[in-house]
Image (cartoon, rainbow, N blue to C red; front, side):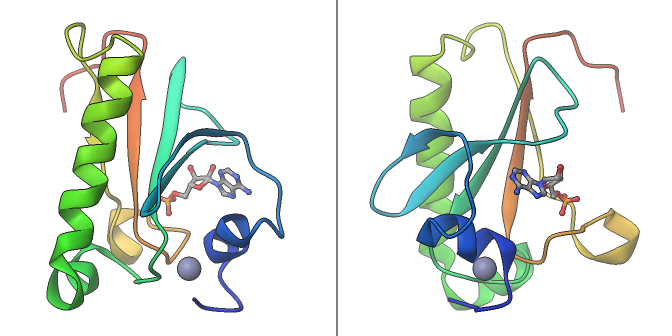
Length: 113
Ligand code: AMP
Ligand code: ZN
C-alpha cells in the first residue's frame, strides 16, 4: 500500500469507484474517462509502480491480473468478439497513475496500431 496512491485509495474504499470485477487479488473498475464502450482498469491489490516493477518483485501478480481478465471477458462474452489490453508505462508511455494497471478496451472495433 502507498498512502499517496489513488488506486490504493480506491482499493481501500477511500475513493469511490464502479467495480465490475473483484477477487482476493485483483479489482476491475470502470475508467472515469472511457475511451471505448467497455473500458475497465484491472488493478492488483499489491502496490507496484509499473509492469517492470511488478514483474521484478511479484511476477505472480501478472498471472493473477490476466486470470481476472480471462474470467471477466468470458463473463461479459467479449472473449469471442475481442478486446484490447494496454499497460501505459512511464512518461513516454503516457502513464498518469503510478500503480500498475491494465486497460481493457472493448465493445467496438479498434483501429490498427
Ligand atoms: P494511465 O494514463 O495509463 O496511467 O491510466 C490511468 C487511467 O485512470 C486513466 O484512463 C484515467 O481516466 C483513469 N482514472 C483516474 N482516476 C480514476 C478514478 N478515480 N476512477 C477510475 N478511473 C480513473
Ligand atoms: Zn497504489
